[in-house]
Length: 397
Image (cartoon, rainbow, N blue to C red; front, side, top):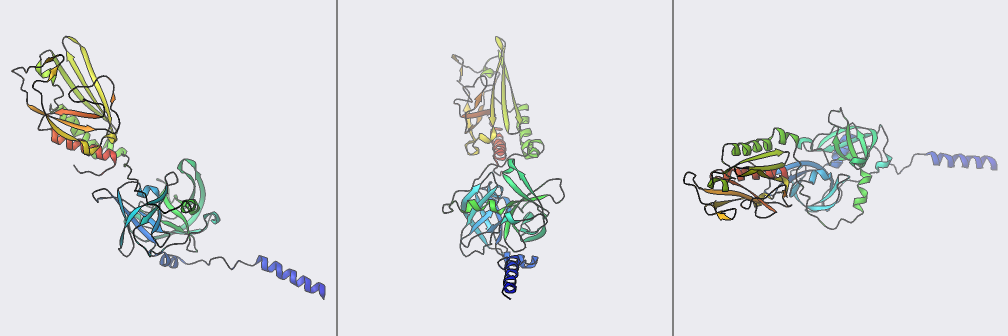
């Protein structure tokens, strides 16, 4: 009888070890997960300094005091942001608490308190084939719910590390939204889709965010406000290309007057040419002189290095300017109108390849173009527009 009792105790112990854990969260259905997440998944709208919207993405609240997780690329452009809840409430973003640009993760702070927050799960416990749910704002369609499975685990070192490959549909605007397991815990951040693929979508494992939460989130930092990169469409067929074409036509029709000293003598003439490659502007002035070989100077500018707020028009009276070592006297047959110079300052030194005109380029961190008084304001507006496009700041023209 003693041995039988011992055997029964052993069987009972083994059964207890093999029994399912009572601590495991029970699976929920999709409607239940959507109800639990309501009010915690937000739409994030980025705006420029004038309040014009630039971009929209998704995010999710992780604390009652308004800490929100999203993708870094959602918040990198723009000088201000608001988060919008499904009930229509708006909250300004106070700043960025932490970010990892390489991992494309950011934690921002919404102004306010008593937010509904989500619980974080353990992305290391995910398995291929496991069902997952995403909630976000694709194309600004707020609180869109979709489901799929974990279809693989991928590593892309150039993109920052590990990714969850998922079949959950993702569109622009979904970025930064939460990916849930069926227990209603956040296990990832929806981030991208593979162009040309069918349901080849990806999420960042939530465990990659947790180190940021431990780094101290007490201080707000300003939004990155990074320039928007110029797209191929802009440089080949979009508004930037149209602006460049107008600027080049301005030169071809004779409105450029970068020929100041040659208008006072019959011995020389000049040709000027602007050329563009992406956001690179090259200004070439060639001097033809009957008394000496042709010479030219070439200046190159990266438009994103020009401060658009410094682009100004200044009237220039060319009478009495210096030509070499003596004063230039106007020829009677050549009118000397009051011209205008479009001037600007750069954040970096201008790269001087040959020479610098003493009229248009008196120092190394400024530049200018001498035009007729009629065209100068229009050219300044076109240049400002091109600079803002290259700098990622919105402009109308």
